[in-house]
Amino acid sequence: MAFYKDKLQTAYDTMKKENIDMWIVAGQESATNSEPILPIISDHEFIGETALIFMKNGKAKTVCTPIDKNGYVNAGVFEEVIDFPVSFDQSVADVIKDVKPQVIALDFSENDPSSDGLTAGTYLHLMESFKLADFQGKVVSAKPIVNRVRGIKSSRELDKIRKACAAAEEIFRKAADVIRDGVNCQDVYAFFQKETDDHGYGYAWSKSCNPGVFSGPGCPAGHMGAPDVVIRKGHVVNIDFGVKVDGYSCDLQRMYYVLRDDETDAPEDIKFAFYTERDGIAATAKYMTPGKTGLEVDTFCRETITSKGFAEWGCATGHQMGMEAHDGGSILGPQKPRYNRDDLIRVPIEAGNVFTIEPGIECSGGHLGMEEDVVVREQGAEFLTPPQQELILIRSK
Image (cartoon, rainbow, N blue to C red; front, side, top):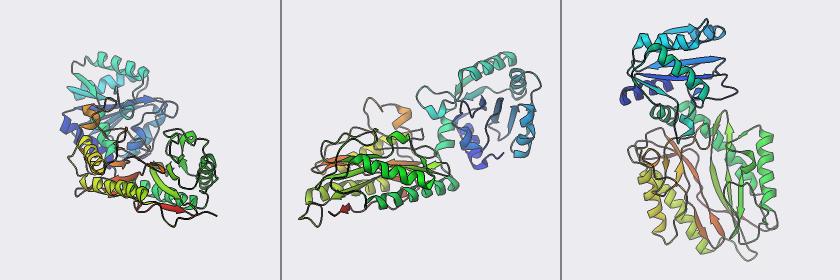
């Protein structure tokens, strides 16, 4: 059993910043009913009723089943390990009475699933504990803690994301030998899945929709896998793909162009669209410094690309990524009804956050949907894999 001390330090720092006295992460049999923050802070699963109790003074206690006691003792991060003999509720209440917190954070959120790990049953147990402790303070969402603990990636986590990116890039390169005139998008989809399975990689999102393979004007797109569409000369082929390696994900899109018989390069209008998107992503990465909000980054990217005469895209410019392709927390999003919440687009980004940058525009050959993965640094975002610089040209065979 191991707890990641860098992540716990982020939790303690956030508790001080938010004036939260106690954070309780509680659950039971997490392999059956997961708590999303648990694998971020530990390699352990809950066995039976368990409460990890963190205090803003940097100390922690845990209430657990007797079979887990030695594991928590040996973890070296808990000043007290309480193996409750009879009552979980009473044992948690005793800790609350001893610490006397005024503000307790629990893992619930109305709109962020990564912060909503507290089950209804465990909530009822904790409410009973609060009653037994005669707790008169305030209960708040642990979302600010969870978002920073999950969102600020350690060097260990970044190394794993880079591995996932490198694995996906190799499959993208191989795909250039499969994509050609007359091949169905579904055949390319099958190729990516075979490569993923043969290498033993996981899928960064649902296998049924991974990868997305889209070719030519008017091709159905979105989270749907691959439509029954035949790739033709003159098409741009957009592939949205992500693998999971060593528990961490990537989320990349790469663009191919299928040359016509008389072409040695893509038409000028398609290249102009591609370079506009490529350069817009690069400029956005430079603009992404700590303190800017997701709304500011999204607006910058949109204005950079639409100033070249292209229509703006309907979805957000980017989302956070980590263990999951969509990793929760704030996004790079616009003031549109789906996204227009302060906690979603007006939260300052921080150094160590990993985001996708994925504007989308239409051109004569179809949809251009490049996507890059970046980590926020003090001087701007760093690409986690070399960004695509040129269309991948597919010659007739």
